[in-house]
Length: 365
Image 1: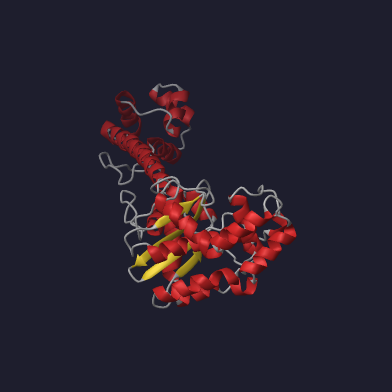
Image 2: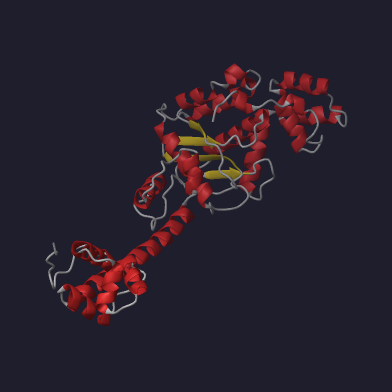
């Protein structure tokens, strides 16, 4: 039975002309070789038209119309619609590649998916919406708005997608915490109590809760590759300070120093106007503000007068027993004393490392 065909109808969805030709040949019981013989064209040419490797030309359209009882325009319309559709697909693919490049330039997408900070989607449109939602923006043309204007202790403004993503994650997690009303004086009193808590892991583990009761949100956000970020202090609003720690260096002394450093920023910084993003915090920063903050953090952990006297009496032989005795005297974890000696270059970083325990034993990031 021969299928009756429209002579001028253009399909709603572009289809390969060869598919229509194959259907017509099947309906007539003709092989491609039969059809090639009928219209006087090579078999290879017919085969390539069926598979889409070769386009239907005006000359071929005339031959098809004569053999199949259609108009030449029917085949030319099929061909032009199909080829235009291919161009649209190619353009869409090119545009998607461009958009993907912009999206991956906005955030470390694969790393965020790996850490389950965002969900993974096969659809680019859904993945784009997920990343934009994480960054708090409507489209990838927008710039993320974070809680404060951050600056880093070493490298200046936030200048990489990974650092920005880390800050956003810190902001998101801090925003989930329901904490008390910020108590500035209570925080100052607690800061003076904190060094003594360092000697007992059980007491140290209560620090996040104690800070939350005082209105300070403490979150632990693992650093992203190539960020070397240690901590940040910022304000979600004028009454909601937050501190984020990466625990990048799994050392108890680094934890206490970084935490104290960020809390000094909270106590002495301006509300909601400026945030502090600290990377490579163990190195001496260029900023005078950061140098003062570092010194304040050190002095809060160990009395400067007592440390100076200890160093003078003990130098150059800082034995394990001497460090343990001094840490007992000032009431801090021995690792804090060791870290201070290493930073002051009074002992090599390889010395007394067995006194430095891991902070991961206390806090899970």
